[in-house]
Image (cartoon, rainbow over all chains, first blue to last red; front, side, top):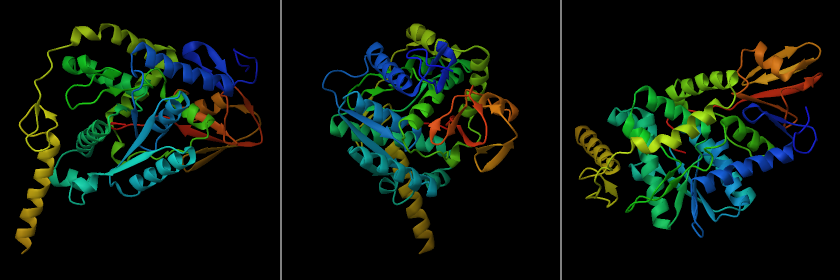
Length: 305
Length: 66
């Protein structure tokens, strides 16, 4: 198999583009895909600083790597979730990556916000699924840290992530979610602009990029992701892709062309009475969760005394 | 003989075999895995013989905020 661009030995076959590429041409291909997403969806304006949310996984570390190579001013944000060995290991991978490439990294620890409790404990205390609690906490901290530092926020969502979410939203016809599913969520008040520069790259392409670029990333999956519906949807979509190459990209790009029809009036936001960050209620979900944890601690300590 | 490592398991294939045939034999979708040989990407069309390759899953999941 020869590279279609330069004739060297190809290492990757991209059926969606009917393209085989060598190491060098594949690297250039990925950079061009990310640049295309940035340009087509107006993701980064001149002079904007980008905070890259990093988890130690292939997508977020590759995104950070790529944005730096493209000359953007970046800072990494790692959120320590307190999920036993998995979190410690992923923090280690992230720190090593930042050190190796001389990049600035900020670490926030969920346990410092929640009286020493990590995601697993919080989920048990409030009797809510770990993924739901985790997602809400991460979104709040990422927004807060990016806002306070004057950054826009970039996440490593790839094409497969977006298409799996799209399928989920379409199956249930969650029209309000469909209206909000975009690679570029504008800033509003204290909500920073959120961007997804990897939306034109598949998960397989990102893993290939990481291997090519010698990026050491955590291969273990979050213990709470076992049996996740999104994984099942990704497997289904990969079967579709194998049968009809390019399906995932077409599904996503054609959706973006019609997304506007799902747009609804945005809910009215007010500053949270505790933290001041925007919420539709009087108190935001994050502060309500903190209050809940604190009241449970008080109850259990008074019961013990 | 080709030694294939997938997660914590090892599989052995006699003689010459292509990466795509290994994936098919193991019932794996080629969109969901990459092959790595000597820390480099290994094209799925390549004929393999007397070597060790690792199959790396690419799907990550859960409620990803990152």
